Image (tube, helix red, strand yellow):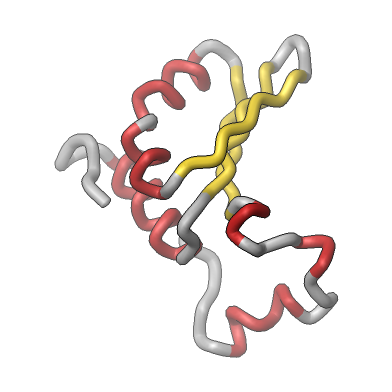
Amino acid sequence: MATNERGDRTGRAMAAQLRAMGVQQVEVGLLHGPTNRMTSRVWTPDEAQAALSWLRRENMRGCNVYVRPSSLAGVRAGQRGHRAGRRPHARGGGPAA
């Protein structure tokens, strides 16, 4: 994944987190502050990275931005067992940041 700018800390952090998710699709959600309305899009990690400037603009307009593995990618939190959260740590993984 290409970072928008070499000195762009947000771009580097986003690229690292998307790589750490290890999925082919992510769901990007925008929670519109005053209305509490959620807008969602499903993108590849490269598409999400390319939309970083738009996501920043929406954040400056008062939206909270959420990124998670897409349920279309086969990761459904409600369908995984109660031990699923411990598995990445058992393999030496952990939070990206």
